[in-house]
Length: 297
Image 1: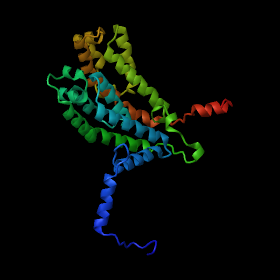
Image 2: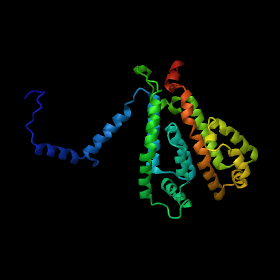
Image 3: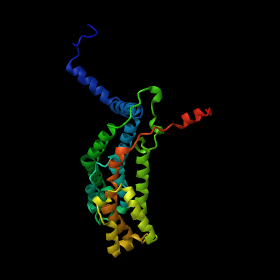
Image 4: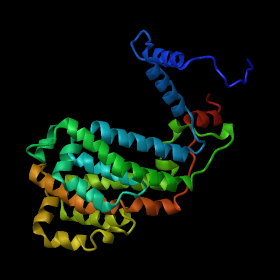
């Protein structure tokens, strides 16, 4: 028979037996051969990089976020708020701010996303953990994955490709968000500002400084969520007292979480897409290359 002859003397029964053998063959640890092959393919796919490290880094971070969201959930509502801000960044602003508000203020959704014993704080009869995990996966499939996919497409149009082998960038050497210093800087400042807001302020002066900085952190987009946030806080004495209370009492913490969910996270989430427009990619040199320059290795 020719090497390229497509005919075969094997019967359908023979083929079925062969496939059955593959499915049932197990190694010494008891794993099915199919699982072993799947794991090997997964490892090889992970090792292959596109030559666009900024894009690969974004994709890697997106997967880590989705895994955390679907598999683990979050320790507290404050951790969930930080995660929602992270969603905005990793989707480059493709998640609608109103969706973030809904997720962070709906007690049923919170009891699905907060998986620690703290979940009872938001709902006396929280969703059982198995159902909660199912709902987290459904939320990810309906909202997070499409948003991350849209952010990926946006980054793809502006990601530098390193073609030469000696010019490739190792993802382990990439520390900045999407290899863009201005995005990394803004993201870190936003996370710190959100943490500060959730913790409360020691004085009215500290609160005023934070409110002034809020314009910088949102790239001037805060008005799209609440144009008069400063004045609203001033008029609503209860809100002001809550923000100036940093004793760690639970009622004040919960009110600050409500305010962060309604005003702060949605406004901050408007910045990533704007920041990307003028952000420049910067390659980071690995420690090995830096030492080589000084003949230290």
